[in-house]
Length: 103
Image: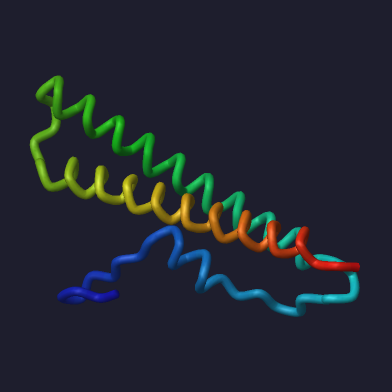
């Protein structure tokens, strides 16, 4: 998203925009790709949470001069947590459906 010439990107948007050249479905690399995406998502969530905690500590000690930075960091952390929760729920639903499949 662009606002007044400033490009705003989120960790999830970066994950979605990542190019995936020559994915070979016969070699079984899809599982590794999915694992890498989930790992990157978890790492981005951890970083957002750590940034939020850091901004909170700075606000409480009086070293943070810019209040919107604190608010943005908190919202970013909250959104990343909600995204992780939604992805986890979808993965568990898919696993549950696979386990119900008759062989």
